[in-house]
Image (cartoon, rainbow, N blue to C red):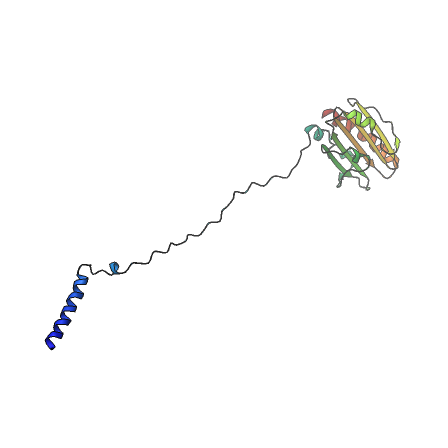
Length: 199
């Protein structure tokens, strides 16, 4: 009886070994490796090319406008210093996109303003002819090379308009008295006319 039990155990062991005999002793063949988990690459944020910043819109004044505008040197004899602020009075009615202006201050606090405007849609003479600045008309010496000139004084402010081609040159002087304003306008008129002729 004991001999049969040993034989049965040997037989089972033999079959067990024969079942493994046709496979290599390699654990890799017994177990399938789990599928490799793909490593997710970091997603790069989509970068859209940014447009270059637009320069501030600026419409430079035509060369003729700049050439006709008074400079600090032109008014140095008036003993003024560059002022701040925009033109006022009758000159505001002439302001357009193609206008350039400059202001100065006298030591007394009086004000000197000059503005040059180009009219592309009409002649400058027509603009000055139709202009109606406040005050009493002032007669000044006619300047050569200027198509038309007109002047007014109201209180302590005198305004002078000159036209040539497409340009209107406008001067305004505000002084302590009307007489001082008139005198300053007379002194500056030839300089304003010369600037306009050379533009």
